[in-house]
Image 1 (cartoon, helix red, strand yellow):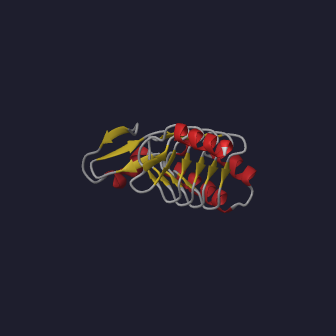
Image 2 (cartoon, one colour):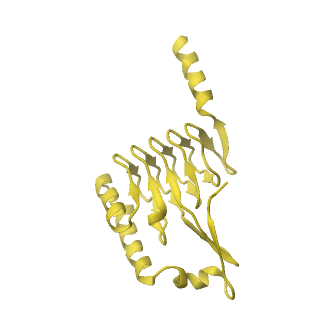
Image 3 (cartoon, helix red, strand yellow):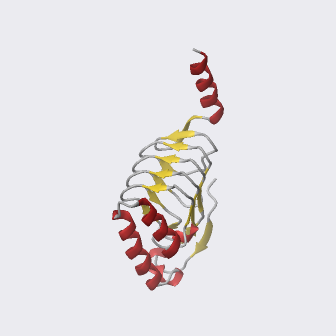
Length: 173
């Protein structure tokens, strides 16, 4: 289950009320630094930009591929562990603006996680350490540690225990 906090709005839809929830200048600053990071080929520079200017928590040796799009409004709600790969053109959202409300939720990605290209990670998600997310997956619920998930809707393809059993069979052969 996604862990988000709901904020009801009255009148126009919540996106029309965007600057009541986040500063215009914060959004401009975030867009500027995210665009630089999306295009820079230097992984260390990307991580430095995310940590320094966007207040994201990013572990050592984490690699954000070309065109990864972290949340523009609330990037500080994103935590990525060490030695994790976020694939090409993946979007990590910490907010969602709906007609009658908006929702905010922390996104926590563990250590040694592999996220394939073109994934969308919704707000309030936890992806456990050692997990693998197949390319093109919409991550709409938590991913347990060590699981391989994929598809839309996302489903568990195999668990950590399944993988260890399979690996043990291969080494015995």
